[in-house]
Amino acid sequence: MDDDAARDRLDAEREATLRRLASLTEDFDAMVAASRDTNADDEHDPEGATIAFERSQVGSLVRQARHQLVEADAAVERLAAGTYGSCESCGAPIGDGRLEARPLARTCIDCAAPTRR
Image 1: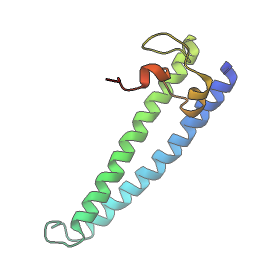
Image 2: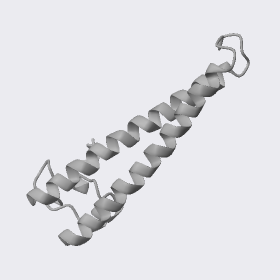
Image 3: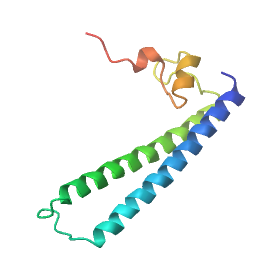
Image 4: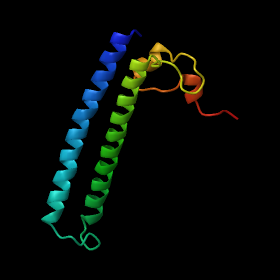
C-alpha cells in the first residue's frame, strides 16, 4: 500500500471514529441527564439495573473509541516516520490485506496470532 493510500485510509478511519465518539458521547450524556430526572434508587427500580448496564456499555464504547483515536494518531505518526506497515514485534512487513482490513495494525499476522501449544 503506498503512502497516499495509507494516509487516505487512516484519515477515513479517524473521521469515522470521531463521528462514532461524538454519537456515543451524546448518547451517554443523554442517559446521564435522563437518569437525573428519574428515581436515583437503582436498587429498588425495576429498570435501574438495565439503565446502569446500558450506561456502563456506552461508557465502555466511548473508552474504546478514544483508544482507537490514539491508535489512529500513532499510525499517522508511523506513516510520517516511514515505519507504517512494518511489524513492531519482528520488523517484517505487515501484509496489504491486513492493513486494508485493519489500517491501525501494529503487528503482522504471525505476531498477532495467539501462541499455539
